[in-house]
Length: 359
Image (cartoon, rainbow, N blue to C red; front, side):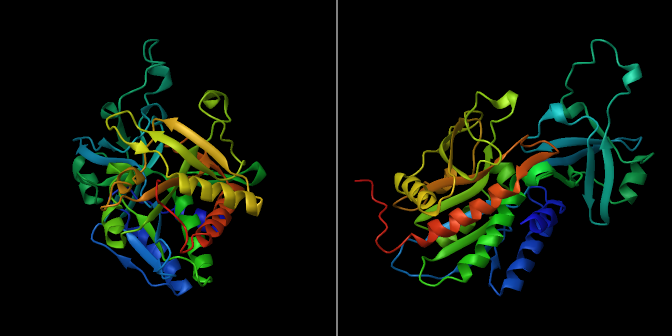
């Protein structure tokens, strides 16, 4: 899990530009001997056929990461950015970034005014992203263009990974390369089982952009059940203590309620049969199972639940994560391994008699 997560975290993959991550995912599926297809948006789907009498299951996670798009190149070579996704502006100044050009990745740094020249009124001000610029060493616009940088070039936090104490890791884009790693590990396990339900595994695109990139893959697979793998807000640091009880290293969890409330009225209230499934599976396997309920976040599962004439039974499952959407997030590897165990065991309990009615 550690090696797989490290590999995926070091690959730039801005929302809408996930090709390199998708290539790595396809390479792992090829080595497992699993067939797959990629749709026009870039979603990678691998189907493991099972008992057609059981409800079919879609399990998905997103490959993309948040970041920026080059908006303007100044005459002096400094680069202006447009934000893509929920980038926290207060975490941007002095961050290292990578500009992903057709000619290769170009390193840069988000400029931060020299401390010696900062006035009292500036010391505690967070600059809006529109006022920030990237210094990649260029002395002119022509020099930037010659290096392959242009309006529309994708920009991400410079990929970094390093170990912390206690089996924890810090780095960029753990959201949601950790989910991608779990889904690859799950693919290998499910392929070794016979008699389970048909499972469609999808590594999706553009979640950080519009939360709808997975919809073509979900439409093509037409599942009865959808499980989405993403982060759960870890609430075990002083700044998060009132938000919930999810702790890093406390094991995988499920979301009992999510609601965005900022720009969109959407979220997920999970299907009770799936909540029961996870609870009973965790109990039977002796696995921890944390519970999350919060406002302020959203996943693309919110839109899948309304698909088809009957709707889709949905549940968000995930792993605790600290410092979300910053350049350095923190995860506990044990949580990812336990999440893989939980999903494997839960899927195998979805039999022809598994009921999804709401009577």
